[in-house]
Length: 565
Image 1 (cartoon, helix red, strand yellow):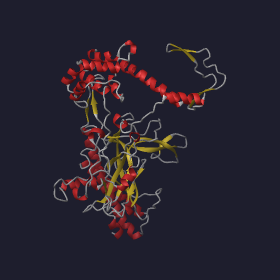
Image 2 (cartoon, helix red, strand yellow):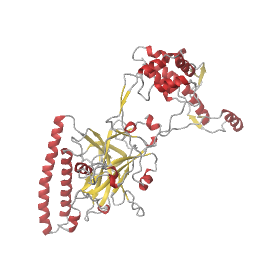
Image 3 (cartoon, rainbow, N blue to C red):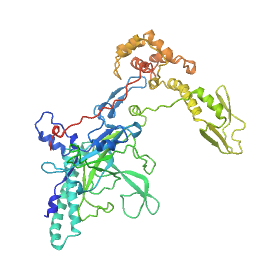
């Protein structure tokens, strides 16, 4: 064995960075053996940030990040018998939830590269010719988790595949004497690989027998063949023209020898040499921006990512060999894969916890200033949005008591008609329509809880200190005391406050406050329970603004506080 082969002989491990390793918690260093072993099979981690400059924040201090809290950062299981009942919400054991960039939340995937030998030393950054990660859609888990026998069998199979691939590459340039030894080595590795594959298949068979098994799909770019038919770029042979932004989800192996999926780059974190205490000092760390959205679609036009599927990330590194050209296009160096990150789902665009991170203020016009400017600038001088009606496309109509009727001149224009509406005018009308139709939507569909999504300061209705104290006694969030709720909704002050807030809205000639109070006696499925009524009224009659969305940062640790594998 040559000196070069000795230096690169150890297997690599892609694991969590050291500040995510388990804490000693009073145990003597380097920590319990089973915990130290768990570090070697740990997965890359997701770190959360509250701004688009997350890369600069990470480069300055890799440990500085927002804390991932179960109450807000996991998908909750919500159960309710209908819109009139108080729901229950459970986050225990829920899937990790990633918010969108529009929610002012961003994420990095971070990993550390080590040699799997005594002391768990870092691998040399110069030995890496490519680092990246893939996002996969998953269903189910590997039986036994990352430390179980199935995961170990997968790692052993992947390791022997890398060794076999390396021997095949050296055979292409080996001399006659060296070729004999390499051929023997290749034959031995082929037998070992077959045995490892058989072990993986045995675990898969056992998993199928015990119930649903793990399904894994990767995003593969799509191209068109000579006949113009869309075909995944990883399938078959022959020339294909790639389709930009088009791909498909296809079944993939856990740790394939070749990367055929669409990959995202991982960037090496080079520590500041003037800061010897930098968390990346003496480490080989990589990071990448986690995509929470994409313009890519499949061949049916469906988006690549949505809020219905569960995803995971696997990082990989290519181990450079001297005989392989380091130009990227022809790289065939062996690939080392990490364990999969914790599975996650994306938050919906209208997730209330997400949108609360970035409230938007729409300034309504000052009517006095608007009047003066309109008279001063004259017709058409205010600019705004122009609507152009092509010939015979003008939707002319007349109105009589809010009833619209088609005008005789409708769609009879011989030329294009252009109408300009100033932005303040559109804003005023839109706000008026919202205010007009909100009570109607609430009343028609009995969606009383929508009243809690409207909040005004100063409030539309003042309530006394006694009622405020009653609201405080109800309990927080969804934990409403049924006995207190029954006494609150029966108070005259409660009904008076509802009247002050809602009596002016009379959809269908019925007072909205009376209908809300009477909803507790409606037949199913429109019955509103008293706990929900009290909670809805408390939210609609709120007198003080809510506190700012908290931004708790994760605890920072020192190397002396974590176990040493």
